[in-house]
Amino acid sequence: MKKKVLIWTMAFAAICVLSGTALAGSKGNQRKGKYIYRKVYKECHAAGKVDSPRPILSPDAKTQAQWKRVFDKKDFDQFGCPEQWSKLSEKELRDIFAYLYAHAADSPSPAKCK
Image (cartoon, rainbow, N blue to C red; front, side, top):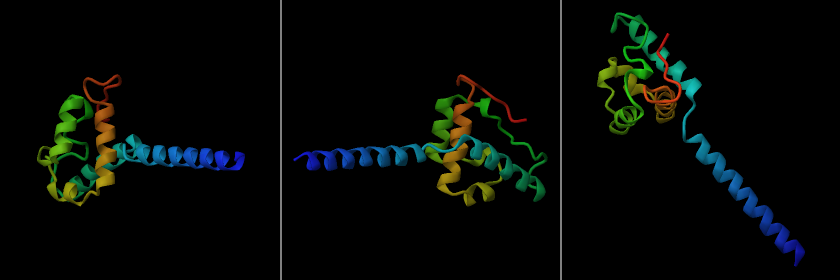
């Protein structure tokens, strides 16, 4: 009887850990997002599509709700370089969103691209 309880307890703990890990991975990585965001603009600049290798919009250009709306609608026209934005994977978009959302104008730590 004790073995069954121990097995069920360990199985439950494993399920909790694995589901927590899966949920944490879906949020996006802010550091990678910052790198990818800047990389997109450097590629655009190298191709002659934009005047500056620096992003047009800094994270504090919008509030968290506005960034959420942009990424929910996938309205990336305002960023420029639609070719580069269309090539990004869902994971890369989640990473960029995590970066922009975390440093939005109404966030605890707003930031500008430097």
